[in-house]
Length: 179
Image (cartoon, rainbow, N blue to C red; front, side, top):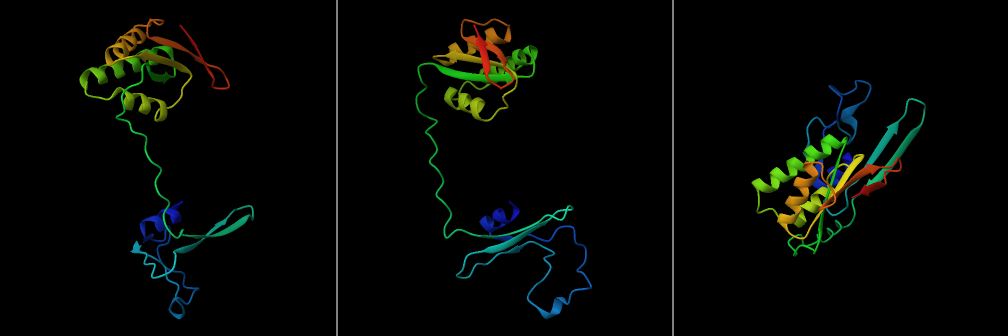
């Protein structure tokens, strides 16, 4: 990963865990040198290449040569998060205990109250893709910001069925949600 990132950023990284060059190598006789500082990695008219070696204590050794692609792949288009909200937007929450789930709902409600300009679609996407999936789970459904707030308030108070459902993940991490 370090070498792929070095290729992407065009920087040769300094050698780690070496304070001074080995006296058993004639460093002056060749084109090999120890990098003591990061340095720009010029390409000229050829792709960047690097050899990566791994030497295991059990005697397992591996070596791979990686090469920079001819051109960086195009980034995938990002979905328009400013699109109008769907008819019923889900907010997914999870926590380690029922009490923590209630506290999570309280924190999210306080966040939305403090920042009413937040796009509910973006908040829902962040909750769905950027949070851990813990064992105690809940879904709050709402067709507008006020409906989402009511569902979060219900969940924070331990009430479900009006705009929120909650449940527990099974050992296979499938959530069973009950109203």
